[in-house]
Image (cartoon, rainbow, N blue to C red; front, side):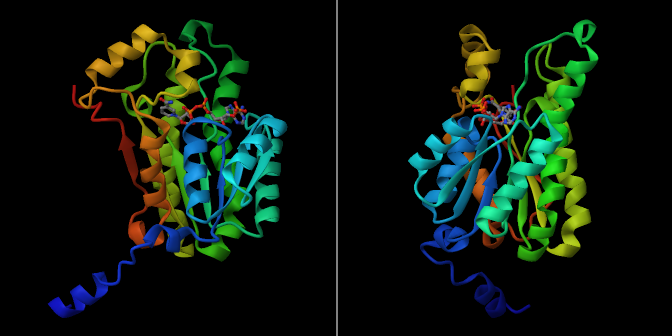
Length: 266
Ligand SMILES: NC(=O)c1ccc[n+]([C@@H]2O[C@H](COP(=O)([O-])OP(=O)(O)OC[C@H]3O[C@@H](n4cnc5c(N)ncnc54)[C@H](OP(=O)(O)O)[C@@H]3O)[C@@H](O)[C@H]2O)c1
């Protein structure tokens, strides 16, 4: 390729690039009634996408959806239940008229439990919610994503690499699954033009930590982070938009972006 051809290929970046990328795109963000998912869904909606948001309580999700504008619909279902996961994705595709972007974000720690106290039910619930739901959602979305040559973005976690703190073994392993799943499906789905990536948040100040971390633990963590603060849900948004954008990330698949304020380097 000549220098002129190279310059021509990289020319033409429009000032409203993100709006051009996402205007009228059909996006499902699971686990978007609050926290990281809500911030991501709101950003897609502001950029002109038609967005399905999701949580467990229909009335609560519909209230959040209404606050994000009239291009946003609310869906409800428990993602520890495969039948409900399937139904939410089917409804999203049906009501949006297809799907361009699937963000597999629903999940939570479900409690800190040491190995000796992990019973079979807790093991199953952790796996179903934090690992299997992304498989079920992606499988149901696949025919629509084949048509759109769409993108999948999974939510992993820094704990998938570090192992997390005591009592979070199953959650951390399930989050590592999200990054591995993205890497593997990237190869498998590439012939369909579907890209699959992951975002791996560090310690993000959402309701999640109100439930599972003490204020002391959080301030100690913040002090160890090179950027000297916890992340916000908004800090995570750019990575999702980037990975979902064919223009910005069209040659990126099977990757995980760490959004953690440099938390590995301490
Ligand atoms: N915060 C962090 O530091 C951090 C770090 C790494 C990864 N993550 C991951 O990022 C994702 C979002 O977390 P967040 O911090 O934004 O937490 P959050 O504020 O607690 O939001 C969690 C979202 O997942 C949904 N969800 C939880 N359990 C569900 C279930 N059984 N079925 C269906 N939906 C369910 C919640 O819906 P409801 O409103 O109905 O509960 C909510 O929309 C999760 O996958 C989490 O594991 C978070």
